[in-house]
Length: 250
Image 1 (tube, rainbow, N blue to C red):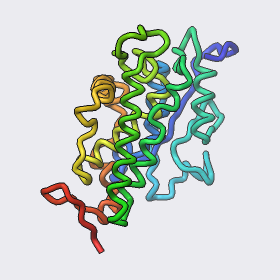
Image 2: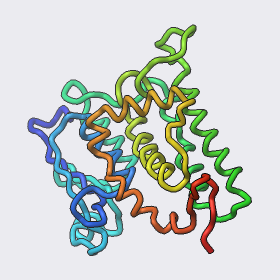
Image 3: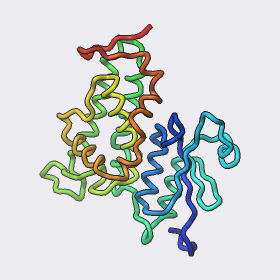
Image 4: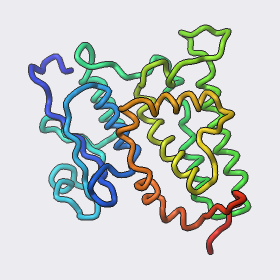
């Protein structure tokens, strides 16, 4: 925490509301910041913003912006990456835990998964579907390999058994990747007939199994119904039949 501060800061995180405005909506960036504040162990207020009603809070606090955004004392911050940097610098040891990775490679692990997944699920060219699926599955395999490869702090002659990307504690990298993997998991099961994680990817299976044991991840995830609602327009273009073959709506 800031050395010049003599009292606990007032922190309010504004996130996208659910479709019924009663809970947290589907937004991996909102969940990312939610997890960071939870892991920092500070008191904060979580406020949902109903985007359907052109809320006054946006006009007053962050005109022209979309959730998530942060109010720290009286200062409003809207850039997600800068918010993360600010929280890591300001909510620092000894009062708060450091969350940055020890190894820079951990920050980039799995970075292509959501991009390749989005291209695959949004594809309407049936001839490209197998290619896009393979690209997506290749990114999962690359993450699996990274999770199995020992970090410099681990014995180099055995497969890594660490819990998370950068070791046995959740870091900023996990807060970025895990919300996206959860979205991918829900949509793959519903619309692509793909189980995430594939059972043969033991490193990825271990990673997600451990993550879902963590309250900080499990309780910050949006409901599956919110994810499906957010992608409902995409789903109208695809359907998976009983044999797992994709058909296309015209």
